[in-house]
Amino acid sequence: MRVALVMPLASASAIADVTLQALPYLKRAWDLEIWCPSEVGLRDAAAPVHAYHEADSEVLAALEGFDLAVYVLGDSPWHGRILPLARALPGLVILHDASLTGLVRHSAVDRNEMAGLVEHVAAMYGSWQAAVIASGRDLDRARWLQFCAEVPLDDYVIEGSLGVVVHSRWHAERVDGRTLGSVTVADLPVPTRSGAAIDDAARMRELLGAVPDGDLLLVTVGSVNPNRHIDVLLDAVASDPSLASRVHVWAVGLAEPGDAEDLRAHAEQVGLADRFAITGWVSDAVLDGILARADAGAALRNPVLEGQSASVLTQMLAGIPVIVYDQAHYAELPDDAVIKVAPAAGAPAIAAALRDIADGQHAGLGARAREHVLATRSGQRYADAIIEAGERALAARPHVTMTYRVAARLRRLGLGDDEGIVGRVVDHTFELYDLA
Image (cartoon, rainbow, N blue to C red; front, side, top):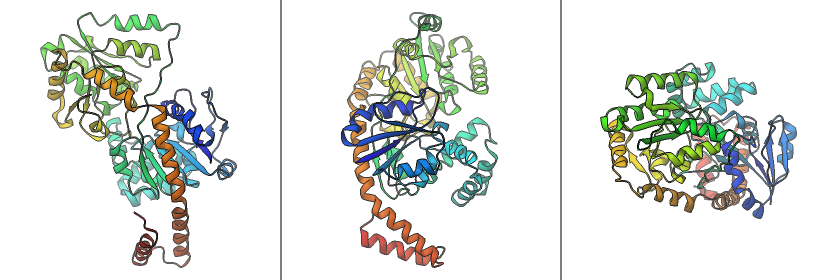
């Protein structure tokens, strides 16, 4: 079977990283070619690669020559030239994020399709939501992230698809019924890291030298956004004198200037200015060094916008105890591999978990977390799920074609807006073709 894998190959894309881990195993089952938006410094891939500048009719015509197109999509501008192809030519969609709001809006602006998107949002979510989409981020950062959770636009992304691959049962339940095909859950691999750069040793000494021997290092990994609740971590540490005198809190990742300023001000307000750091971007080797020194990790996203968290898997693989909110896909992690706290419990529950870690009550938790990741997160396992989803997608194609033709016929007859007739046609179609 000839398959076009439409994905980003940007060197900084973690989604490209995990997809390429499945590539050797996908190639065993499929005659596979990669189609990717052109970028400076594309990753190497052990398959034929076609880099395209625009998602135009020429690329679409080429993809139509394959038995199946597989689209890899996440809420990032790297996917802006993939989304139009996925909407134009039904295929299998590998969906990495539970909210695609940023991607959809970016694509609509880029392709001058904002009017249609605003109309869609007004019909599906409401006029105020449509106004926000039309105006852009006319909200503060925290409220914008909440808006993205409330208006995820996943329906816009996967309507007409032949099937969807997601990375948690929680995400599967959210998209169930929004695709004409099946929803498959695949265990996401952990992004790889690729060794040291020349100046890494000095950078590591500079960072780690700030944590005295005997003190505890608590880290959170990934972009420093308001939904990571780093302020709540600081409150938890500051609330207990025994923690405030021993624990250092590090946010390892990039931060918008305003977010960084707010967090540093908060750390000063609660008396932890000298025990809090935002590292900014760090190399793979420095991240390895930080995780090797860390005593605990945290992944406290709320709202949850991703379908699975690569950063929590990275921390678990490092073999450290990780505190997570007991919600969304985090709730699916084994109870004996992470520490789960209710989001509503806030800083007191996090402080209690940190005290338990400091007192050695979670000995062995990090080892179990690492064992879980090693046992369940592999490129081969990921590929097997994608291959199974591809078979289901091909089986769904006749039903999708029939759906489009029936809808077109109803429109030609002037009956497309008659809910009673449309409902009866849908009911008969489901009975005839045993659709679930």
